[in-house]
Length: 505
Image (tube, rainbow, N blue to C red):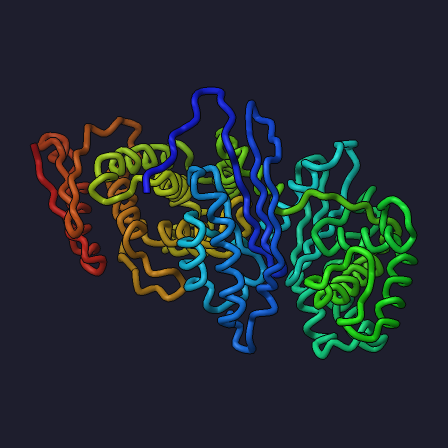
C-alpha cells in the first residue's frame, strides 16, 4: 500500500496516538497546524488486556481476540495516515507478556502501523507531557500520579520537564485480580490490597515527600472515574480528590459486598471488575505520599504521545536530545562521530533501494548508532564496543521504545571486531538490522585513522548477500591499514552471510 500524499506546505496534518493500556485502548486523533493541536477524534475501548495474562504470563486467546477486534476498528480510522504521523505504544501488560512479539505482529497488520513497547519510565515521561499539556503552567513543582491497569507511574517535574520518574507494578487490574478475584469485596481484601501497595511504595516514598512538590495531579481512567463517582455521590461539580472522600468510597464498596452489586454513579459495568483495585491503589499512594488534595487532569499518556509526535514532525525529536546528552555524559568524540555518521549515511543512500532500507527509522537508527558507537570508551578502551552495547541496552533513554533501544545497542555492539550475532544478550540481527550493522562497520573502518581530511567518494553496490566497495587506487595505496582492515572485514562478515569485495578505480 502506498503512503498517503504529504500535506501541502503549511496545510494542516493529522496526527494520531494510540495507547494499548492494560485496561483500555485509547486512541486520539488531532489536527496540527503551525505547531498547534486540535482534537478531532477520541475513541476508548475497555479491552482488559492484563486480565488476559495467564499463569505463564501469556495472553489468552480470548484477550487476544478482544484486542485484535478493537484494533481492526481503530485501524479503519488510522490507515489513511502516514506512518510518521502515528505512534502506537504498548505498556505494562505487553511488557509482561512473554508472547508479546506474536501479538504485536498481528496488531500491526490490524492497524497498518508499527506498534512499540515502551519502558515504565518512558511511559512516565510521556504521561507527564500529557498532563502538562492539559494544564496551565503556573510554575508549580508537580507530582503527577497515573494509575493504570498494571502499573502506577509517579513523576515529579516542573513546566514540561519531568525530573524524577518511577513506574511501580501496582495497578487497578493487578490489585483487583489479586485481592478481589472471586468478586467478593471485603474490608480485609481492601486492607490486603492497600498494604501490598504501601510495601511497593516504601522504596520510593522518600523521593516524593510533600516538600518536593507544590501540587499533586492525578491522571488516567482510574483517577477520572474516582473523581466522577465522588462528585456524583455528593451531587456536585467534579473537584479534587481527598482522603476522606476515598475512605467513604471504600466503605460504600465494602457495603456492596460484590463486584456485580456495585451501583455507583459513573462506574460502568465494564469498569466494575477493576474499580476496587484502582481505589485501593489510589488510597495507598495518597497515604504513602501524604497527599491531602489531588487535582485531576484529562491529559495522560495519549496526549503525551501527541506532544512527543509533534516534536518529531517539527524536528524537535527528544531522541536526538537523548543521544546528545549521552555523548556529553560519556565524553564521546563528537567530531569523529560526525565523520562516521556522514559516511555511514552516504553508504546507506547508495544501497537503500537494493537493500530496502528506505524507511525513516533506518536512517535515524544508523545515525544514532554512529553518534554513540564509541560510548563504551568512557569505561575502557578494551572491548569498548561490548561496554557500549551493554550501556545502551540497560540505561533509561527518553523517547526510545524498547525495540529501538535494543536495536541501537545491537548496532553499537556489532560495529567492530567479531560479528557476534550469536550473543544471546542481544536480539539476533537479521534483515535490516544486519545490513545497517555492516554499513556502520565499513564507516568505522574508513575513519580508523581519525584524520580530519575528507574521504574521497566511496562507491558501494549491494544485493541480498554481497557488498562491493569501490575506492580510488591511489588513496587505498596511501592507507595500507585501511586496506588490511577491509580485507579482514570480509572474514569477520562470514557469520552474517554477507560477503565483501573491494575494488579500485
